[in-house]
Image (cartoon, rainbow, N blue to C red; front, side, top):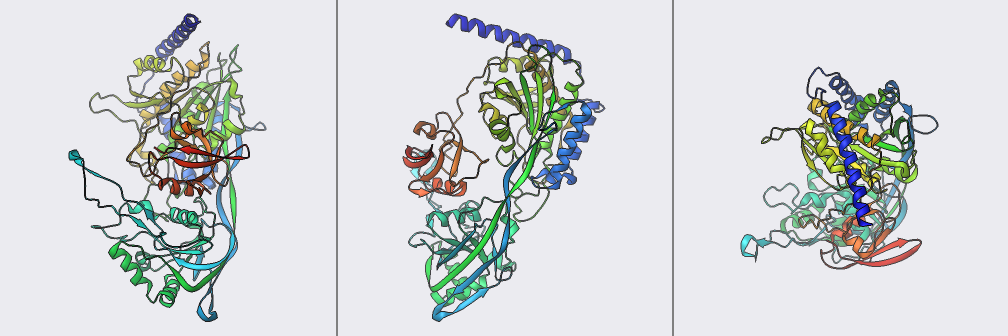
Length: 635
């Protein structure tokens, strides 16, 4: 049996290599860098439009992403491809969670000493936060400082192994206060927010409003009232509009923002100190001053309607002919990006709406798919497997477009899908200063026997410097197919300083280099489409590492962002990772860590950040309607 398996493997490898040499010889004469190449002109036109202001950063929910989808459909039509979507169209529509609206303005009434009652005005005295949940809450007020919990980071003195002087601090605004059923009043930012010399350690990690709200939830608060710190007050004590965090992961409790003048009146009455003095004392000593606010309660009421956003994958088909025609090769790229910023943006200008053009990420991959579609559509009566071209939406929201296709609506049977080729961020090809060769990263080479040898043979003519990676998982759409036991290729040209910033614009794209990636991808696709034997899937062990310098411990799971549930739905589990060793499976719903309820991904991350690497922790999961408690050792 072992000899027979080896013989079959050798035959498959020779088949792949023979076809590789055939396609390499047939395509080697193409110009790869000529500025007047028609392919370069076509690709420049495509990426210029897709990354233009007209497409508004191709954010789900914008008119711009619909214009981009219409453009892709038109290019598929002009190429002569068949519709691959539903009902004879090029589209596969679905919906994703996103956005919210206030059903009615929130209500906030303060109840003070001696029967005092103050009804605050919406949009003037207070504002409902975009991450708020609906609810009616009546409860006492508790000042919870900056809403931060952090532990000091242990350190060692270089080679001597002695403890270094720990410049980190232990700081916990929630220690010693009871928030159960009460309303937490929390300052924005961190202590010493504007201090350059002795600032609060890792302040950006603790300043996020989502994290502050998650900590309040974990500590059993019924609601949150955010207040500007002194740095924001100096700029006018402005209230954040509801729209500011409307696309953030919502909390599970109501969240409002009130004016500093309102809280100042409360602290003067209940603590005998103005808010500025309390804040100054925290900033000076870096010690929390959290306390109940005696005599003060609040009544809050808000109704928030969480909305869904209609999105769509765009799909076209080049049919094959002959005995392999019922099998499929998928060629994909995501065409969505971040729109005007928000979650995922690295612009560092929170609250400012600015188009994130996404030229490299991923107008470049979409442009390459369009170019490949045009070339392959011209091959009339092409023998071999059908080739399905898919541009996915909502990738930036968690691979939602490809997960929808693979998990819910595979329009071409996955059992007959022999491979998937993904192009994501292929527009920044650069030259290695030592070898003078252009660099390309190719992943998935271990997901089927012969894939690595195929790339080596095809590259003999291309002359690229290829960085080869075996794994099939990763933060792009090939991951969705690999998890369905489908071999994958993933092409990209690497990270850069413009990633997820407005500065990722079309003029920075290396269009001739992008064409070189498309040339290589074309050879791979045609080989996959015509090889007599389909590539056999190989499961590659996940490259799980402990990442000791990371901010939080890891369980080794990938959340499933496609379905909104109370808890965190496990989409995938890393081989040999802590979750896998403990018996956590894809499809489990994590509802508890260390005895604390997990309501969403925000609370999951916060609770996990409080755990110690290497120390067992109880993780509660729901599986088939039953709760299981598993011991996991975070790494």
